[in-house]
Amino acid sequence: MNKFKGKNIWIALVDDWELRGDGSGCVNDLQYNNALKLMELYNRLKIKATFNIEVMQQLAFEKYADDYKEIKEQCDCWIKTIQIMGKKGFDIQLHVHPQWHNAFYNGKSWQLDKKWNITSYPVELIEKFISDSIKYLNSKFKFARIVSFRGCEWGVCCPSNPLFDILEKNGIKVDISVVNGLHFDNEHIKLDYTNLDSPYLPYYPDYDDARKISKRKTGIIEIPTQSYIKDWKFIFKKTLWKLLPNRISSEVNNTKRRPNVNAHHSKGPGSRKFFGAMNSTRHIIMDISNLDIYSMIIGFDIVIKRALKVKNAGIVPLVFVSHTKDLNYDKLWAIEKSIKFIKKKFINNIKFVTMKEIIENIDLVKPVNVKP
Image (cartoon, rainbow, N blue to C red; front, side, top):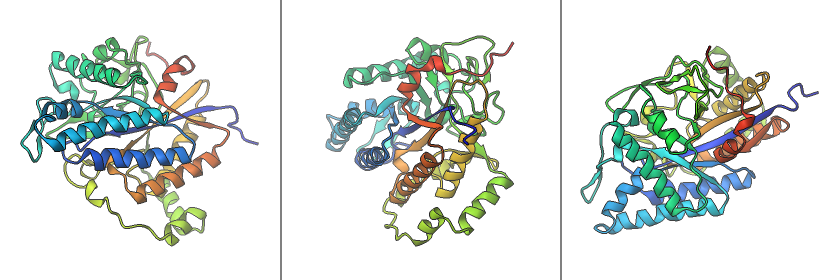
């Protein structure tokens, strides 16, 4: 008997659709081709997902489209890809890389601002970044309903104001930028998410500090991107998965894999390899485009079981991240095997949804208690 039968775990697979943080890369390769492969994979699995569209890149490209043929081609390819997303039933939401503000193209490469956290900018620029991006998406894509936001490198802190007031004013209902255990201290971004009030469950955020639960009900709900702790239990489980005979380990050992033709995509500043999917010694972010298959399966298992233990929570939304730019054949293979595994194991417990679907049913989500 399934003791968790009747629980409502809603899984949102949310992809950050963008070029590198330093402006490197080609739209056709990192965004168009990889997005098509990811959509094809999700269609095979009969699930829908969300693409977080980074818009400021496109706004910068448009400024140079009349002067450079290669920039114009990438602009058109960017729009074409999102149109395909809409036709295939995928959701698009907002992602903002503020470093594209005043970006300069010298004919060969881009020069971007060094500040990557949107909260590092003046209020008038934050307002412009958000409103211009939403207006652009709404003007180009009739199917768009922009209600969810993620900041560049998860940056919405600290302080989180005036960003949250601006997001709410522009119709944003959910932020998914916070992730437990994340810590950055470099020239691009400084933030510390190592002490969250609610590390895994949705909550009403304090608009001055998104890491804390608000003392009042707010217009935006924070849904943390999922992570889990790399402890001895994880290491033990991973060792067993690798060593003991099972379907996954057998396929990993015996499958003839294609050459990693996209390996060069994961190098340099702005890549997941540069910053790392694990930004502390104890926490692993559920970035499914940058975990090996064992870490992914164990991570899904830990996160879903953790959510199933929550009492009186209504629908429990779980957000998992991926980065299209980092995908290659091996990573797509691992994502497919992992999702097939958890779909079979938790068939009565989980439902794959888009961020738009979560917002449409937000009344069924019960954020953790507001602080007294």
